[in-house]
Image (tube, rainbow, N blue to C red; front, side, top):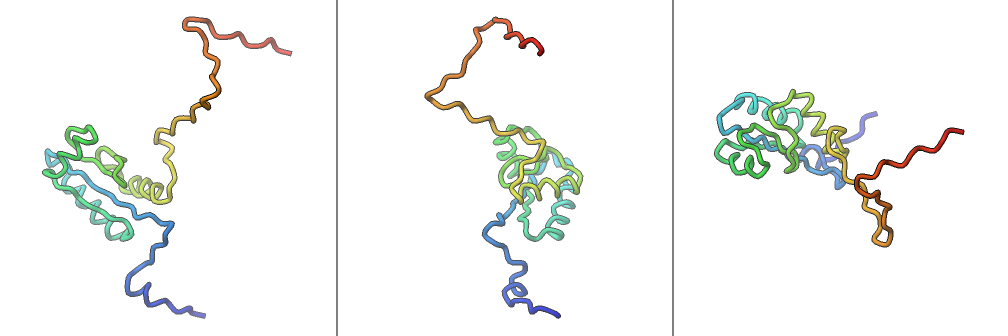
Amino acid sequence: MVFPVHAAQTLCGRLRYADEAMVTLAFLSSIQDFQEGRIQEIADRLRKEHPEWKVDVVPPEGSQALLAKYKLKFGPAILVNDRIEFVGIPRYRMLVERVAMVAAGRISPRTAQPAPAAPGAGTKPAAQAPGAPPAPAPPPG
């Protein structure tokens, strides 16, 4: 049995749902024109294989201000949702896996984890005096 496809899906492509966030990738070009061909090759491949992602290649003139914002001197770099994810150009598979993790809302195991929550204002953790030796471990048994 074949189910009919809704007209909206055929006219507009795949429908996105509210829980699916749009992923934007920005390839910041090197101000020294380093790996320019590789950047364009990967961007074209991403556009073809993942039309649901917005892929932009920023030219060297436009990259200079963005590279300075992220405290980089030369580039190339890749921004995913306006966060720097790669400095340099990674392997294609590695890039796709990382962007898919961002799209799914998962944190990469390589990303710095958020700081633990601070104790409440009413409680004060017991602090050791500076230079004091650590407390000995309890005896076994």
